[in-house]
Length: 397
Image (tube, rainbow, N blue to C red):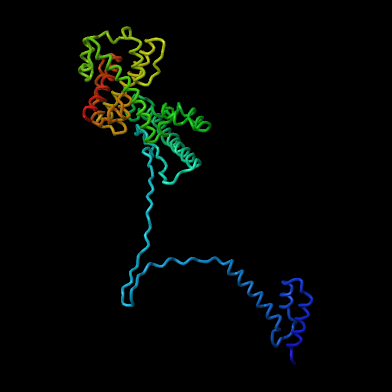
Protein backbone atom coordinates (compact mmCIF):
# COMPACT_ATOMS: atom_id res chain seq x y z
CA UNK A 1 0.00 0.00 0.00
CA UNK A 2 1.38 3.41 -0.97
CA UNK A 3 1.48 5.68 2.11
CA UNK A 4 3.21 8.67 0.55
CA UNK A 5 0.04 10.25 -0.91
CA UNK A 6 -2.06 10.26 2.27
CA UNK A 7 0.88 11.82 4.15
CA UNK A 8 1.22 14.51 1.51
CA UNK A 9 -2.51 15.25 1.66
CA UNK A 10 -2.51 15.57 5.41
CA UNK A 11 0.53 17.88 5.32
CA UNK A 12 -1.15 20.11 2.75
CA UNK A 13 -4.29 20.23 4.86
CA UNK A 14 -2.22 21.32 7.89
CA UNK A 15 -0.57 24.12 5.90
CA UNK A 16 -3.93 25.50 4.84
CA UNK A 17 -5.23 25.61 8.41
CA UNK A 18 -2.10 27.24 9.97
CA UNK A 19 -0.92 29.88 7.47
CA UNK A 20 -1.05 32.65 10.11
CA UNK A 21 1.46 31.12 12.56
CA UNK A 22 4.82 29.85 11.41
CA UNK A 23 5.65 28.06 14.61
CA UNK A 24 2.29 26.21 14.55
CA UNK A 25 2.95 25.28 10.98
CA UNK A 26 6.21 23.67 11.94
CA UNK A 27 4.60 21.78 14.78
CA UNK A 28 1.68 20.57 12.68
CA UNK A 29 3.96 19.65 9.84
CA UNK A 30 6.16 17.66 12.20
CA UNK A 31 3.06 16.01 13.77
CA UNK A 32 2.41 13.17 11.35
CA UNK A 33 -0.33 10.55 11.77
CA UNK A 34 0.42 7.50 13.90
CA UNK A 35 1.21 5.33 10.96
CA UNK A 36 4.30 4.48 9.05
CA UNK A 37 5.40 6.79 6.28
CA UNK A 38 7.21 5.56 3.33
CA UNK A 39 8.81 8.91 2.46
CA UNK A 40 8.64 12.47 3.89
CA UNK A 41 6.48 14.98 2.17
CA UNK A 42 8.00 17.78 0.12
CA UNK A 43 6.50 20.63 2.20
CA UNK A 44 7.32 18.90 5.51
CA UNK A 45 10.92 18.35 4.49
CA UNK A 46 11.29 22.00 3.54
CA UNK A 47 9.78 23.16 6.87
CA UNK A 48 12.00 20.87 8.93
CA UNK A 49 15.07 22.08 7.11
CA UNK A 50 14.13 25.72 7.82
CA UNK A 51 13.57 25.06 11.54
CA UNK A 52 16.83 23.12 11.87
CA UNK A 53 18.71 25.99 10.22
CA UNK A 54 17.29 28.50 12.71
CA UNK A 55 18.17 26.27 15.67
CA UNK A 56 21.74 25.80 14.46
CA UNK A 57 22.22 29.58 14.04
CA UNK A 58 20.90 30.31 17.55
CA UNK A 59 23.12 27.60 19.04
CA UNK A 60 26.19 29.04 17.32
CA UNK A 61 25.37 32.56 18.57
CA UNK A 62 24.89 31.37 22.17
CA UNK A 63 28.09 29.31 22.31
CA UNK A 64 31.10 31.41 23.53
CA UNK A 65 34.01 31.40 21.18
CA UNK A 66 37.14 30.11 22.87
CA UNK A 67 40.19 32.17 21.96
CA UNK A 68 43.10 30.09 20.92
CA UNK A 69 46.40 30.65 22.68
CA UNK A 70 48.86 32.60 20.55
CA UNK A 71 51.28 30.34 18.91
CA UNK A 72 54.99 31.02 19.39
CA UNK A 73 56.56 33.09 16.69
CA UNK A 74 58.40 30.94 14.21
CA UNK A 75 60.61 31.95 11.35
CA UNK A 76 61.25 29.29 8.71
CA UNK A 77 63.10 29.96 5.47
CA UNK A 78 63.12 26.54 3.88
CA UNK A 79 62.25 22.98 4.84
CA UNK A 80 65.79 22.33 6.04
CA UNK A 81 66.11 25.53 8.05
CA UNK A 82 65.82 25.54 11.83
CA UNK A 83 62.69 26.98 13.43
CA UNK A 84 63.29 29.90 15.83
CA UNK A 85 60.73 30.15 18.62
CA UNK A 86 60.40 33.34 20.68
CA UNK A 87 58.96 32.63 24.14
CA UNK A 88 56.41 35.03 25.59
CA UNK A 89 57.81 37.40 28.23
CA UNK A 90 55.90 38.64 31.24
CA UNK A 91 56.69 41.91 33.02
CA UNK A 92 57.11 41.45 36.74
CA UNK A 93 55.29 43.87 38.96
CA UNK A 94 57.10 44.75 42.18
CA UNK A 95 54.84 45.64 45.08
CA UNK A 96 56.30 47.62 47.97
CA UNK A 97 54.92 46.74 51.37
CA UNK A 98 55.57 49.08 54.31
CA UNK A 99 56.35 46.85 57.27
CA UNK A 100 55.34 48.07 60.66
CA UNK A 101 58.33 48.68 62.92
CA UNK A 102 56.17 48.12 65.98
CA UNK A 103 54.27 44.99 65.01
CA UNK A 104 55.20 43.10 68.16
CA UNK A 105 53.96 45.98 70.35
CA UNK A 106 57.45 46.71 71.69
CA UNK A 107 57.68 50.46 72.36
CA UNK A 108 61.15 50.94 70.82
CA UNK A 109 60.27 53.26 67.93
CA UNK A 110 60.94 56.83 68.93
CA UNK A 111 60.13 58.35 65.54
CA UNK A 112 57.31 57.13 63.28
CA UNK A 113 58.07 55.90 59.80
CA UNK A 114 56.76 58.32 57.15
CA UNK A 115 53.44 57.15 55.77
CA UNK A 116 53.78 55.71 52.27
CA UNK A 117 52.50 57.85 49.43
CA UNK A 118 50.40 56.36 46.60
CA UNK A 119 52.42 55.10 43.68
CA UNK A 120 53.12 57.70 41.04
CA UNK A 121 50.93 57.37 37.95
CA UNK A 122 52.02 58.72 34.62
CA UNK A 123 48.43 59.40 33.64
CA UNK A 124 46.74 62.58 34.76
CA UNK A 125 44.57 61.74 37.74
CA UNK A 126 41.04 62.94 38.07
CA UNK A 127 39.76 64.83 41.08
CA UNK A 128 38.11 61.68 42.41
CA UNK A 129 41.39 59.73 42.20
CA UNK A 130 43.25 62.48 44.07
CA UNK A 131 40.67 62.59 46.84
CA UNK A 132 40.72 58.81 47.18
CA UNK A 133 44.52 58.84 47.53
CA UNK A 134 44.25 61.76 49.97
CA UNK A 135 41.87 59.99 52.34
CA UNK A 136 43.66 56.66 51.94
CA UNK A 137 46.93 58.26 53.09
CA UNK A 138 45.43 59.63 56.30
CA UNK A 139 43.50 56.42 56.91
CA UNK A 140 46.77 54.48 56.92
CA UNK A 141 48.35 57.00 59.29
CA UNK A 142 45.46 56.89 61.74
CA UNK A 143 45.46 53.09 61.59
CA UNK A 144 49.12 53.06 62.66
CA UNK A 145 48.36 55.47 65.51
CA UNK A 146 45.28 53.66 66.88
CA UNK A 147 46.22 50.04 66.24
CA UNK A 148 49.99 50.06 66.78
CA UNK A 149 51.32 53.06 68.68
CA UNK A 150 48.44 53.48 71.12
CA UNK A 151 48.42 49.78 72.19
CA UNK A 152 52.21 49.95 72.55
CA UNK A 153 51.88 53.03 74.76
CA UNK A 154 49.23 51.33 76.92
CA UNK A 155 51.39 48.23 77.19
CA UNK A 156 54.27 50.43 78.31
CA UNK A 157 52.13 52.04 80.99
CA UNK A 158 50.95 48.66 82.27
CA UNK A 159 54.39 47.05 82.34
CA UNK A 160 56.26 50.13 83.62
CA UNK A 161 53.91 52.33 85.66
CA UNK A 162 56.79 54.54 86.80
CA UNK A 163 57.83 56.88 83.93
CA UNK A 164 61.26 57.37 85.50
CA UNK A 165 62.13 53.79 84.54
CA UNK A 166 61.42 54.34 80.85
CA UNK A 167 64.25 54.38 78.36
CA UNK A 168 64.88 57.29 76.02
CA UNK A 169 63.08 55.67 73.10
CA UNK A 170 60.13 54.68 75.29
CA UNK A 171 59.90 58.25 76.54
CA UNK A 172 59.91 59.56 72.98
CA UNK A 173 57.13 57.13 72.04
CA UNK A 174 54.99 58.21 75.01
CA UNK A 175 55.44 61.91 74.24
CA UNK A 176 54.64 61.44 70.58
CA UNK A 177 51.50 59.37 71.22
CA UNK A 178 50.20 61.86 73.80
CA UNK A 179 50.83 64.75 71.40
CA UNK A 180 49.05 62.92 68.56
CA UNK A 181 46.06 62.12 70.75
CA UNK A 182 45.69 65.77 71.80
CA UNK A 183 45.29 66.93 68.22
CA UNK A 184 43.35 63.88 67.01
CA UNK A 185 39.85 65.33 67.59
CA UNK A 186 40.36 68.68 65.78
CA UNK A 187 42.28 66.93 63.01
CA UNK A 188 39.43 64.45 62.50
CA UNK A 189 36.92 67.30 62.33
CA UNK A 190 38.89 69.12 59.61
CA UNK A 191 39.55 65.89 57.73
CA UNK A 192 35.83 65.08 57.51
CA UNK A 193 34.34 68.54 56.96
CA UNK A 194 37.15 70.82 55.72
CA UNK A 195 39.78 68.62 54.04
CA UNK A 196 41.07 71.53 51.96
CA UNK A 197 42.74 73.08 55.04
CA UNK A 198 44.79 69.95 55.85
CA UNK A 199 47.94 71.27 54.03
CA UNK A 200 47.84 74.33 56.30
CA UNK A 201 47.51 72.10 59.36
CA UNK A 202 50.56 70.15 58.21
CA UNK A 203 52.66 73.32 58.25
CA UNK A 204 51.22 74.27 61.65
CA UNK A 205 52.10 70.91 63.16
CA UNK A 206 48.46 70.04 63.81
CA UNK A 207 48.52 66.68 62.02
CA UNK A 208 49.37 63.41 63.85
CA UNK A 209 52.95 62.35 63.26
CA UNK A 210 51.89 58.97 61.85
CA UNK A 211 49.96 60.74 59.05
CA UNK A 212 52.97 62.61 57.68
CA UNK A 213 54.90 61.43 54.67
CA UNK A 214 58.50 62.38 53.83
CA UNK A 215 57.37 65.42 51.82
CA UNK A 216 55.24 66.73 54.70
CA UNK A 217 58.13 66.39 57.15
CA UNK A 218 60.43 68.23 54.76
CA UNK A 219 57.93 71.09 54.38
CA UNK A 220 57.53 71.42 58.14
CA UNK A 221 61.26 71.56 58.75
CA UNK A 222 61.94 73.89 55.84
CA UNK A 223 59.39 76.39 57.13
CA UNK A 224 60.80 76.22 60.65
CA UNK A 225 64.36 76.53 59.31
CA UNK A 226 63.46 79.74 57.47
CA UNK A 227 62.10 81.29 60.68
CA UNK A 228 65.05 80.16 62.75
CA UNK A 229 67.65 81.39 60.28
CA UNK A 230 65.93 84.77 60.08
CA UNK A 231 65.99 85.08 63.86
CA UNK A 232 69.59 83.84 64.04
CA UNK A 233 70.72 86.46 61.53
CA UNK A 234 69.17 89.29 63.53
CA UNK A 235 70.64 88.06 66.82
CA UNK A 236 74.08 87.63 65.24
CA UNK A 237 74.01 91.20 63.96
CA UNK A 238 72.98 92.50 67.38
CA UNK A 239 75.69 90.52 69.19
CA UNK A 240 78.33 91.68 66.72
CA UNK A 241 77.61 95.27 67.75
CA UNK A 242 77.79 94.48 71.49
CA UNK A 243 80.81 95.92 73.31
CA UNK A 244 81.62 92.89 75.48
CA UNK A 245 80.17 89.58 74.19
CA UNK A 246 81.04 88.70 70.61
CA UNK A 247 79.59 85.89 68.45
CA UNK A 248 82.87 83.94 68.62
CA UNK A 249 82.51 83.65 72.39
CA UNK A 250 79.23 81.68 72.01
CA UNK A 251 80.10 79.13 69.34
CA UNK A 252 81.34 76.35 71.67
CA UNK A 253 80.07 74.91 74.95
CA UNK A 254 83.30 75.71 76.80
CA UNK A 255 83.15 79.34 75.63
CA UNK A 256 79.52 79.60 76.78
CA UNK A 257 80.47 78.26 80.21
CA UNK A 258 83.21 80.91 80.37
CA UNK A 259 80.70 83.65 79.57
CA UNK A 260 78.38 82.34 82.30
CA UNK A 261 81.19 82.58 84.84
CA UNK A 262 82.18 86.09 83.75
CA UNK A 263 78.63 87.46 83.68
CA UNK A 264 76.66 85.45 86.25
CA UNK A 265 73.68 87.83 86.52
CA UNK A 266 73.43 89.31 83.03
CA UNK A 267 71.17 86.52 81.79
CA UNK A 268 68.86 86.53 84.77
CA UNK A 269 65.18 87.13 84.07
CA UNK A 270 65.32 90.51 85.77
CA UNK A 271 68.05 91.72 83.40
CA UNK A 272 66.67 90.45 80.10
CA UNK A 273 64.83 92.73 77.72
CA UNK A 274 61.39 91.80 76.42
CA UNK A 275 62.70 91.71 72.83
CA UNK A 276 65.35 89.13 73.81
CA UNK A 277 62.73 86.83 75.27
CA UNK A 278 60.53 87.29 72.19
CA UNK A 279 63.36 86.14 69.91
CA UNK A 280 64.06 83.13 72.15
CA UNK A 281 60.39 82.09 72.28
CA UNK A 282 59.93 82.49 68.54
CA UNK A 283 63.02 80.41 67.85
CA UNK A 284 61.59 77.48 69.82
CA UNK A 285 58.10 77.70 68.30
CA UNK A 286 56.43 79.30 71.31
CA UNK A 287 53.92 82.11 71.23
CA UNK A 288 56.11 85.18 71.79
CA UNK A 289 53.61 87.96 72.42
CA UNK A 290 52.91 87.62 76.12
CA UNK A 291 52.56 90.80 78.17
CA UNK A 292 55.21 89.91 80.74
CA UNK A 293 58.86 88.96 80.39
CA UNK A 294 58.49 86.72 83.43
CA UNK A 295 55.79 84.69 81.67
CA UNK A 296 57.98 84.25 78.62
CA UNK A 297 60.91 83.28 80.80
CA UNK A 298 58.99 80.72 82.89
CA UNK A 299 57.57 79.01 79.83
CA UNK A 300 60.95 78.92 78.08
CA UNK A 301 62.71 77.58 81.17
CA UNK A 302 60.06 74.85 81.49
CA UNK A 303 60.83 73.81 77.95
CA UNK A 304 64.56 73.78 78.70
CA UNK A 305 63.98 71.60 81.77
CA UNK A 306 62.13 69.04 79.66
CA UNK A 307 64.99 68.99 77.17
CA UNK A 308 67.50 68.62 80.00
CA UNK A 309 65.74 65.50 81.26
CA UNK A 310 65.68 64.22 77.69
CA UNK A 311 69.41 64.96 77.34
CA UNK A 312 70.25 62.87 80.39
CA UNK A 313 68.12 59.97 79.14
CA UNK A 314 69.81 60.21 75.77
CA UNK A 315 73.25 59.93 77.33
CA UNK A 316 72.16 57.08 79.61
CA UNK A 317 70.08 54.80 77.36
CA UNK A 318 70.71 55.54 73.69
CA UNK A 319 74.49 55.37 73.94
CA UNK A 320 74.92 59.05 73.23
CA UNK A 321 74.39 60.85 69.96
CA UNK A 322 76.33 58.24 67.98
CA UNK A 323 73.77 55.56 68.91
CA UNK A 324 70.88 57.36 67.18
CA UNK A 325 69.55 56.56 63.75
CA UNK A 326 69.43 59.29 61.10
CA UNK A 327 65.73 59.92 61.72
CA UNK A 328 66.20 60.03 65.49
CA UNK A 329 69.19 62.36 65.17
CA UNK A 330 67.28 64.74 62.91
CA UNK A 331 64.31 64.80 65.32
CA UNK A 332 66.61 65.39 68.31
CA UNK A 333 68.41 68.20 66.47
CA UNK A 334 65.13 69.89 65.52
CA UNK A 335 63.94 69.75 69.13
CA UNK A 336 67.19 71.43 70.22
CA UNK A 337 66.99 74.35 67.82
CA UNK A 338 69.03 72.99 64.90
CA UNK A 339 67.66 73.58 61.40
CA UNK A 340 68.11 70.40 59.35
CA UNK A 341 66.70 71.68 56.05
CA UNK A 342 68.20 74.25 53.66
CA UNK A 343 70.63 75.81 56.13
CA UNK A 344 73.05 77.26 53.59
CA UNK A 345 71.53 80.50 52.31
CA UNK A 346 73.59 80.53 49.10
CA UNK A 347 73.04 77.00 47.85
CA UNK A 348 70.46 75.59 50.26
CA UNK A 349 73.03 73.11 51.57
CA UNK A 350 71.92 70.81 54.37
CA UNK A 351 74.07 69.98 57.39
CA UNK A 352 75.63 66.53 57.39
CA UNK A 353 75.35 63.96 60.15
CA UNK A 354 78.67 65.14 61.54
CA UNK A 355 77.31 68.69 61.84
CA UNK A 356 74.14 67.50 63.56
CA UNK A 357 76.04 65.32 66.02
CA UNK A 358 78.32 68.24 66.95
CA UNK A 359 75.38 70.61 67.45
CA UNK A 360 73.42 68.14 69.61
CA UNK A 361 76.49 67.30 71.71
CA UNK A 362 77.19 71.00 72.22
CA UNK A 363 73.60 71.54 73.34
CA UNK A 364 73.72 68.64 75.81
CA UNK A 365 76.95 69.93 77.31
CA UNK A 366 75.50 73.44 77.75
CA UNK A 367 72.04 72.45 78.94
CA UNK A 368 73.23 69.91 81.52
CA UNK A 369 75.69 72.39 83.03
CA UNK A 370 74.10 73.82 86.17
CA UNK A 371 76.27 76.95 86.02
CA UNK A 372 74.91 78.04 82.64
CA UNK A 373 71.54 79.90 82.80
CA UNK A 374 68.83 78.57 80.50
CA UNK A 375 68.34 81.87 78.63
CA UNK A 376 72.07 81.85 77.86
CA UNK A 377 71.76 78.31 76.46
CA UNK A 378 69.02 79.48 74.09
CA UNK A 379 70.93 82.62 73.18
CA UNK A 380 74.07 80.61 72.42
CA UNK A 381 72.12 78.10 70.32
CA UNK A 382 70.75 80.90 68.13
CA UNK A 383 74.24 82.25 67.55
CA UNK A 384 75.61 78.76 66.84
CA UNK A 385 72.94 78.20 64.20
CA UNK A 386 74.02 81.33 62.32
CA UNK A 387 77.65 80.24 62.71
CA UNK A 388 76.80 76.89 61.10
CA UNK A 389 75.00 78.58 58.23
CA UNK A 390 78.01 80.80 57.50
CA UNK A 391 80.34 77.80 57.68
CA UNK A 392 78.23 75.89 55.14
CA UNK A 393 78.19 78.93 52.85
CA UNK A 394 82.00 79.12 52.98
CA UNK A 395 82.40 75.44 52.11
CA UNK A 396 80.07 75.78 49.12
CA UNK A 397 82.07 78.62 47.57
